[in-house]
Image 1 (tube, rainbow, N blue to C red):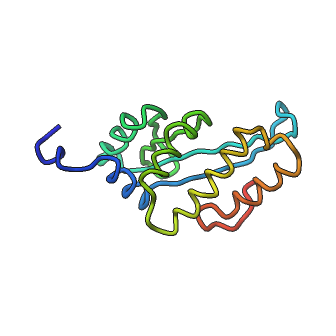
Image 2: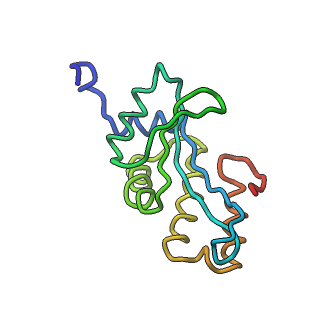
Length: 147
């Protein structure tokens, strides 16, 4: 770590970067192997041009979870954490301690609520699954159903 980088408070930097470039997402996909016929997939991701990807490797090291992969849709690379355990034990606690300052914090709160419902197996109950689908439509201000 360089002298300049040592002056940066990494957790705050990560939150600020995620505020601008990050995405909390909960998708629902039809799945024959799941009890209700649907899979619920929460994820936290950050994309960046490959030549500025150092921050993604910093995030992966800091959170000690997730993966980095190419995103062929826009020729960037993406850091992504999808494991519910990692989201509950690493990602969510970080953003609770170092909160996002913009309206994206509302998306985080919805994301956290859905992850907590999943932790308690509430996504396996039809009424709660429908609530999750409804809530997920409001993440990132999208207000549309993701099917």
